[in-house]
Image 1: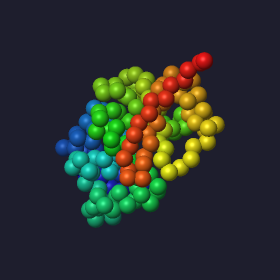
Image 2: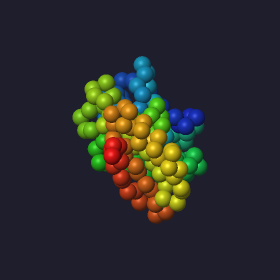
Image 3: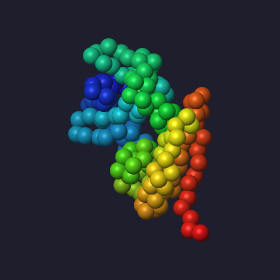
Image 4: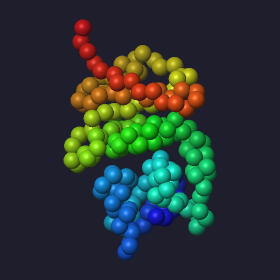
Length: 171
């Protein structure tokens, strides 16, 4: 399947014989479906490219995966991409968590937006960075306030990801 990269968005045109784009959205919840195309974020498109389901073109020239990954690194999103890829490989449906101050919202397999509410908010942190305790408390408070579990994804210097399930408790 072909996707065209422009301004950080990969667009897959929907036409005759290209039902795969519709299926990616409806079954696996990739991207945003419009009347004539499927719009994918760079992370979604990279994941699909890495798994052999999408070829990305820029100015009618086929892109290599290294080029797309370098774009993600240039935007300082590589750690988030690693978390996205790992969670996607585990079968989760992933949507943006921007509204909640987190990187992602997670849905269990077989669910998704419009079918149920997300189960987790995912906040990506880096082992080398300090975390302000007030910021940490706000992550927990927001997730608790919207009835979601908070999953901290900590990316270390070797780009390994460790997950911590954080819960609000009252003493």
